[in-house]
Amino acid sequence: MKRSSVTVLSQGWDGPFYRVRTLSFEVAFLIGADEELDQVNNVDVEVRLPDGSRWSATVFTVAEVERLMARWAETGEHSGGKYFWCSDGLVVRDPGVDNFVRVLAAIHEEGQLTTILNRLDEAAGSSAGV
View 1 (cartoon, rainbow, N blue to C red):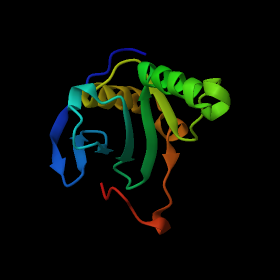
View 2: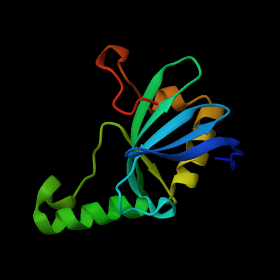
View 3: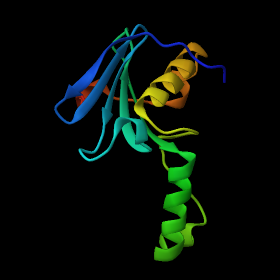
View 4: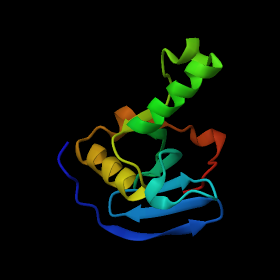
């Protein structure tokens, strides 16, 4: 994936969500209160495109997937950590909200965002309210 250039129009906290608005989309991150933005490695996101459609994913870093699988090896979950599965998972190399925004922008530029992320049903209402 080529390095994506992202123009961020605004960003900041809105209740429990950290929101980033770009020229191409808006994204809401559900980040834990004790997490540093540049160290986030496991987060639920909701992306809203200009057409109003909403898309979701859980973004994990490779290191976070490894950490989870190691823990599960000890606890016996997921067949002793032998596999990782998440229906809306997106695995990225590097942590941090800024990196996640760049990855989402690159996926969008490549025309893959609506293939990779899961569409949210408008009838169900928005949990993130992007």
